[in-house]
Length: 363
Image (tube, rainbow, N blue to C red; front, top):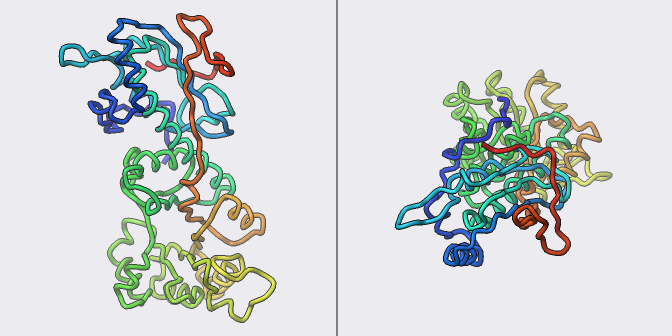
């Protein structure tokens, strides 16, 4: 489904721990001390805070950053919180915008004591979500329009799933593996017949697949892992024959330390381990030869943008890629600087006010 990023996400969708963020629980302590000092001194400087990063990237987490400012800026007064959002002027880019190194993505203008305590939180969100956006957009581009399934949930803490899934979705991933990852746009997690279920049926991929498809074929595209016995060609054919039109695709996931049995007689001239082009060719040829031309092939297991580019350059007959841990690796840090004080330049050496005409006023 299309995602309308011109409309910013409502702050409620993030389920922010508002009281703790206001208290500075998640903030670097020195920002909390800064806020406390300014308030106790009665010093309320009007500043312009400017946020940027240093890569060719894709912006993620900006709606969450705005939500943090909307709900958590302000100050405590006689055991109640006086909200500060209406006293701030915020300009920002949109979720999924392409951004250049050092391009300003967000400015916050107003009484610094109202939002000094929030810098750690909104910068961290921008860093994490933009990392996911950038990585996913890279593999989507590498795949040249083929489907990308976002499968890194098992490689990271469960708490990051909701926002990461949203970022992957905006960046072009066609499916995510958990309901949490799909929750912000009202989707559902997708998946394949897993190794664990196959093991639960005594290693019988066909039996496990039949049980799974009988129960779930009306709810999802049935895709089956076919490497349990390390004989992907034989297993793919057996599953296709057993499931017939209920089978959407087979997923190749051979370990990088193994050579699939179907390649034993083909060794030499190519790296034989893992999911490689020759293995895909063998499975595709076997399925087509048996009349199962509509069955898709999903390749997974250690795929990166570079590896996908190599497969696509070689014309490998993959229909979709399952990509996991590579999508959460790397860094995309953001920096925030006070660059104006009462409208006049006041930035540390090496930083200066860099207005960006692409920024839009946030209401």
